Image: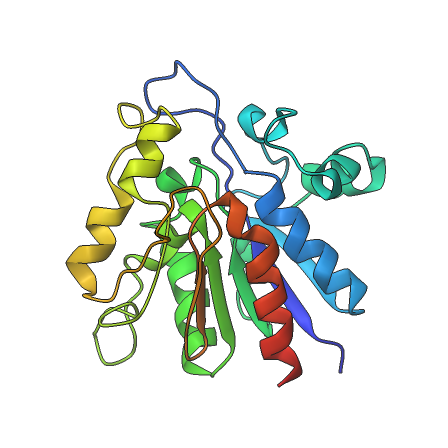
Length: 229
């Protein structure tokens, strides 16, 4: 059986204020997608609403986009995939070896309280499958409860975009909440890189999280290594 990977991305194109655009942070999708395809794995890209995915224009800026992501941005076949994602409802009930939540600030609006997403994560986590998330994609883990009623991330080692990084990004006044603070409410094992905006990946059993966009390459590598074990 071919390894099946579900990558979940945001459907949200704007902050609540309506002033600034947001969306998927492209590299947080491309590195996982590329690594999976290199290994001959099947990838399904899904979003809460399905259909076209907004890309955060910040993630496409020349100073922030890496070569791999730039190549994918100019790949018409790949961009068509992003225009025709499945909805989470369409993939419910399907079995995957990995459920990976890509980030971008849009996820702060349509991931945390999405019960369909929560059920997908819960089922796969309890089945011993890999659940991974990077940057703001970690928002999707915040409210997931397991069968015993406890939060999935309770007392788990975890990382995610921190509040100082939010200041560097100039988004503190735009975001609906402080992700670092919310993670710290549910676990005493939140970790972050010593230097902000550098790669950090944390593994706790079958839960794998990456801190920021600069962790995209490393989290893809770690997930592929875990799959081979």
